[in-house]
Length: 114
Length: 113
Image (tube, rainbow over all chains, first blue to last red; front, top):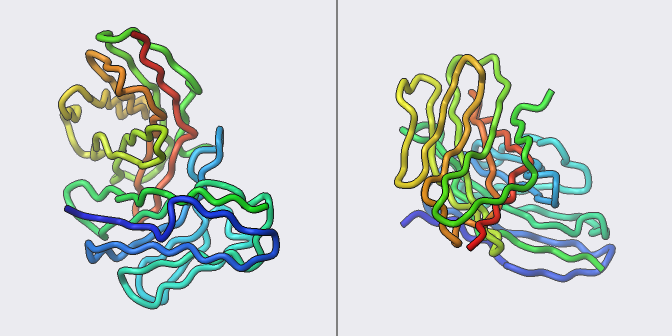
């Protein structure tokens, strides 16, 4: 069964800390995505990557960076966490093509910044 | 302009009844895909159904069907015979060329016993 895993389901950090959220997929997908989800706002794209070492900004990249050194792993970094980054973070991956090229999602990380 | 619009923030349905969740989309691409996901309170995103823009027939998956009206740019999800476990957030999404995905703001469905 295909799988996207995220390093933590719940995370509590303090303001100013550097935070790493890890995402790993085992499906050899080219594309990987990081979203944040807030009530009433749906899923908003932070960054996506279409290949190793390649990345593109999404709708809300400010305060975040990403790293993709290996095809299966896509990391989201909060350089200096702030309280307004308290949110649900979802990672997803998708192949370039296929019959139903949908996104496969990880279980999500609920991040609280105090 | 919003790429995906879901106009129903919350919906209620009686158990065993059918319910339609609305979704309209905006694209100038000829080739695109439309998806519905379910998100229970646990937070996981569960894929429900897919419709390709060139598919002539409406997609169906068990109790889920997608009412695809291309000219109106709508892709409504129909859930038949609602169950208590259907209570969740439902998101409509679209994939355009270049691996761009867009999501609506979601509809919260509550199934009443």
